[in-house]
Image (cartoon, rainbow, N blue to C red; front, side):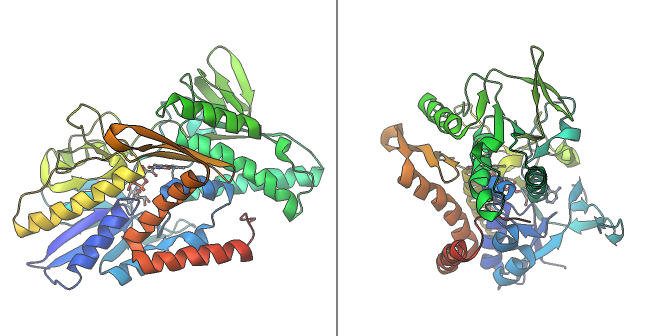
Length: 431
Ligand SMILES: Cc1cc2nc3c(=O)[nH]c(=O)nc-3n(C[C@H](O)[C@H](O)[C@H](O)COP(=O)(O)OP(=O)(O)OC[C@H]3O[C@@H](n4cnc5c(N)ncnc54)[C@H](O)[C@@H]3O)c2cc1C
């Protein structure tokens, strides 16, 4: 529409949905500004919960946020579609055709005009070109993948029940970062609950999780004693932790490690590395780094185009000390706030502000068995937390995301409904 400023946000994840919600609320009464969110999925689930989707602890039908309903309540529009290209000269993005499951074209490829574009399409795991990963591994890169993995696990346990087998079911988790470690613990939770639901032969020892890490310790981005603690908890549950182990290839029987070692696997989950989609590589001529992140300046705008912002996992920002902002939910959350303010400033003709990254620490959850982490304390000192406090803080991270989306009252109601559901519904999604 003539005279209207069109803000288009691509990617409704941890950062993009918070941004769309804030901008929608801000401009809902101003006809001169429109806010459009585009995502390739119809609903949002906070990505740090994907390992719970994989284990069945979280039911996306209950906990997902429907983009259309959320948009209607918060003053922005939503379109379903996947980004496929960018034409900076004409200020247009291209979206892939929307296909039905039977191959029918629901909506043909289309273009969308923008005045301000925000790219927030996140990242995926990095297969480092290891042969067989694409064909034989699950990932936790999307809700769909996490759900498929859950189905596969249930099928394996059903087979074991039908044949009376006590296993073990061999699950290889590649990548000893927070994602792999949290998933490993969640998997043991399944074996603790399945006997309640008629899988009487399943016990903890019916599952063998092999956690493979290329460096010399799991959680190697966190202090040494957190790694030790994590190893103790996982070993206590029955996991086999292999460090200094590099995967050379994956096939239908398992993974081959450097040094001729082979680990047989019924299921392999790839949780290693971070890489952005190939679609982003020099998209529209923008500068990207080797993992396809868009290089941004301190205001979070592309180094090549001041009408394009990038945030979250798909943005590469080098800080003054030479380090990069890490691909984490807290970074996406902080970047969304900064981009929101900078768009408001830009529209008002005021200067944009520089992004400041605050590392509040890291928490790792081991399902209901334990939670550990480090918090940024006073004068740069790190404080170790464990147990109930750590669990409370871990849950608070998700609550903060919910507050950004729904406000305090609705978040409190959602927390209450969650508590009630825990009493009324099975502890695991069983279908
Ligand atoms: C299992 C797991 C556990 C994690 N735990 C933690 C944790 O405890 N703490 C922490 O800080 N971080 C954690 N992370 C990392 C954190 O989830 C990410 O850093 C964060 O979600 C990044 O936010 P984002 O907005 O950049 O991208 P995302 O939240 O990934 O959102 C990207 C959005 O873009 C959409 N999209 C993707 N491609 C396209 C396309 N082509 N077109 C249109 N839409 C597209 C996706 O559907 C998605 O909605 C975890 C990640 C995983 C996988």
